[in-house]
Image (tube, rainbow, N blue to C red; front, side, top):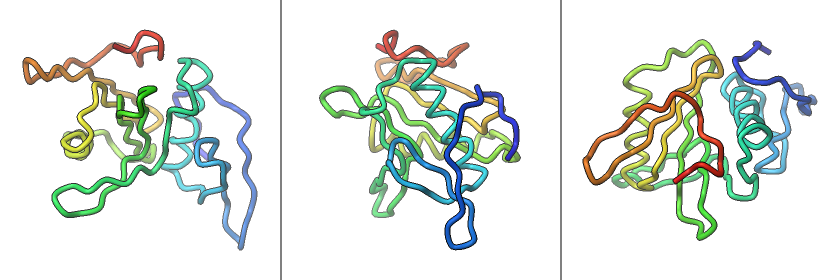
Length: 150
């Protein structure tokens, strides 16, 4: 798989029914190894290992009901009271991060109303803090450490 702009780590990859699968530490099972999944697993490892995010407060492939349609957030970080705090959307490395990607995660946020949105294709990462009072957002220079989240 492609080299990413994220720290390398020891992945668990195997073959099942002729297809490559990778172990998802959040879902605790093997899932299809797609380019987007490669990004997800590296990004989750980065958040847990380098940013101190508690694995127990993260979920992958979170189902949402958005205006009567079923959607799935790639990763959601929860607070200890299990309210959503952050949504993370992944794209394959060859997918450019565009306004459409931000529109997608913003639609998910209409349901979850989180404080932070992150978008990554494994090469570029964007994090913004939502200010509901002023109906605005601020792009952060870096992904915050878990302990520094508001």
